[in-house]
Length: 91
Image (cartoon, rainbow, N blue to C red; front, side):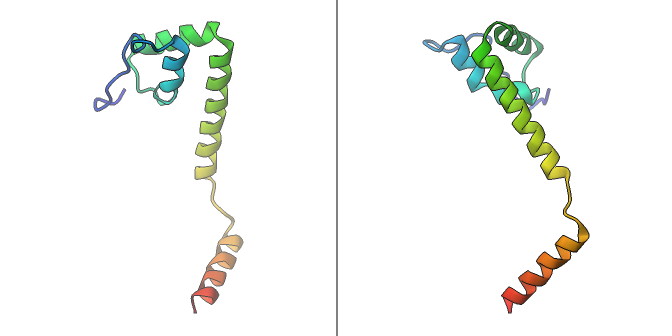
C-alpha cells in the first residue's frame, strides 16, 4: 500500500449501504490501495453479493484490457505510415 493513500473507512458512511460502499471504493480495492482489513471486508461482501461480484469482475477485465493495450506497440510499418500522413497534412 502506498504511504500517501488514505485507506477507505471500515464502515459505510451514514445511510450508505454495503453495496454502495463497495462500488464507490472498487478501484481502491483493485489498485491495492486499502488496508488489509478493508480488503478483507470488500472480499467478504463480494463473496456473498452477486451484483457486486459481477461489477468487480467487469472492472477487473476492463483494467486488464487497458493495461494490456497500453503495453502494446504499433508495428513499425504502421507507425511510419502514420508519421508520413501527419507530415503531409501538416504542410
